[in-house]
Length: 306
Image 1 (spheres, rainbow, N blue to C red):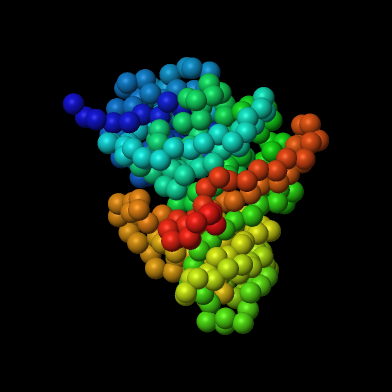
Image 2 (cartoon, rainbow, N blue to C red; image 1 turned 90 degrees about the horizontal axis):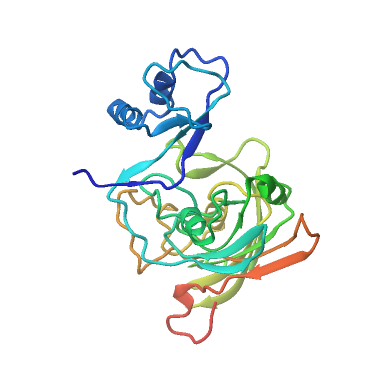
């Protein structure tokens, strides 16, 4: 028997207007080219694809613009993430959770149920729970999750407006210019050719900004405090490399490790989303949270927490 892990919550996709498809089946095969056609055939045969009102999708179901399709992601032999998240705060609207390294926030790639959002939905019983923002799977620290779809936009807008003060800690090599301890990075970032990593490009308007401070040194290693002003993909990782540093144990920057490489769980990337501060858009109350986690590279030989 084939062993697979199936998502406990459906993924959704809306059927756009104007596309030249006869059936929903044709659209799904086109829309998700990395999923083999026989996989979609099997899912439809087993009733695993349906409209959001529960109506099943068959091979001959006509394409209907604006309707929403639900399907359940499946992966073979999903790897168990051996680290646990911790809920630091919870009220009727949102949850603030301290995420461990290696745990993705949302289902993606080879992860379906071993994700922060899926775990929290099971713990809280909130089927609509989702994150208001994202941090990388390799990053540990604070994530704000909203319990209901109706209020999710209020908290997402805080991040979009730059109304959330976010502070990170990172451990990395010391830049060659050792006389500098403060950097204000303002550059343009765009995807690289492989569309997986990001890069700084010399032309075009600035679209990413971070404030970086070197706050402690140890041998050839530095502890950096980073405040992202914008929220581009991999922003802090790229910006730290741009000043001549780079995050310790980063699997992507500056040197790429193959995605298929197994996690080195004893060598997590040394980036921590340490604090969040914002005014609650529902209650108007100022909120501030701090991670209980620390950077491994700075506690191995020194008491206390960095």
